[in-house]
Amino acid sequence: MKNIGIKISLYLNYFVFAILLNSVGIVILKSQRNYGVDEVQASILEAFKDMPIAIVSFFIASFLPRIGYRKAMLIGLALVTLACISMYFGNSFDNAKILFATVGVSFALIKVSVYSLIGTVTETKKEHNALMSSIEGFFMVGIALAYFLFPAFNNENDPNSWLNVYWLLAGLSFLSFLFLLFIKFEETEVAAGANLKDDFLQMFKLMAKLLTVIFVISVFLFVMIEQGILSWLPTFNTKVLHLPENISIMMASILAISLAIGRLIAGIVTKKVNWIYVLSVCIISAMLIVVFVLPKTVGLEVKNINTLSDIPLIGFAFPLIGLFIAPIYPLLNSIVLSALPKNLQSSMTGLIVIFSALGGTLGSRITGWLFKNEGPEKAFYFTLIPMTLLLISFFILKKITAKDEI
Image 1: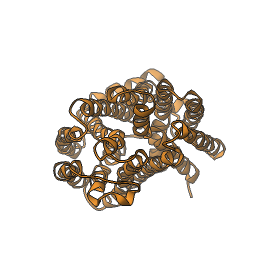
Image 2 (image 1 turned 120 degrees about the vertical axis):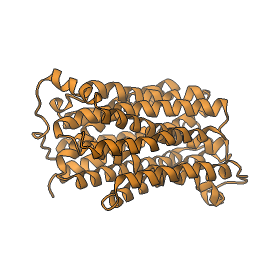
Image 3 (image 1 turned 90 degrees about the vertical axis):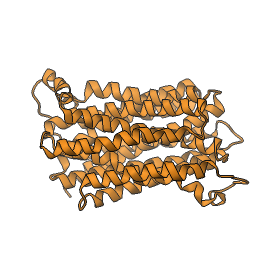
């Protein structure tokens, strides 16, 4: 099959980084337990992950095609391999900051490369939408795996046992490095451009368009919601449901699994249903879960929990919000990227990554502050604010794209 090696590499790279990036919620929980930091201090790990993504994306997105997408991804994989080994030997909150800063820098290289290459290995908007949704869905599978990998290495009688997982993660990163190094990889389609200054200015020119402004605000709001919940669900399970640490982490996998399923289904549904209907139903359903399901979860009385099967069914309900927020991110990205010429997709991807990172940082910091000052029982109710704004942005985007102003 055409470009099969490149496609496999895109899936594999995204899978590795899914585990690394979204282990931040687990490390936030472990940092509070092992390194003696509070909720607000622990939430800084999200910033160490996301701010490097934003900064690096800003400077490299427009001219990354000149560096070469293969080289960029190889650099990213090499860096995280070393960072994982460093985390094992460092074993401190400062080393956790270094780990996520390195992961952030590397993911900027990976994500801009992956998003840009999707446009070169697909020929139609439907193919673009399907590949984007399936890759993002596979990303969520990696996140779900993280919630089982870390408990598998974690022994609550040995506070350092969980660090052994970083040898496995270093090995996965290195294997992905080797696969990418030896596959056939053609980049001639995406290497062309004008000059470096013009490439860099493209990002600012895109920001002058109303479509881009509304789009990046939508991306920002979505990631604020998603990362706020993903990063703090293990802590919520521990402090509100009073679950054992390993069970709390594994319970959070339900959110990741539901996100994966939601994105894979979205790739099928959007071939037949207009995206505005899909996104509107999804965000309204998510709001209803927060309003009606979350209060019952918070009020749940949990006793003698030793396995997942001991948890009452209502305890599994709130993480299912992932089914409904899942389609939002890949659909928003595909709607805009597939409408742009290929020479602008790298610049737009840079903006996506930047505002995704800023949204993730702010979402986690706000949630951490709410956990400490308003109580973990109330923190997730505040997601209704960005959800409402996101619903409004969908209709504005629909109106703009209907006029073919892209």
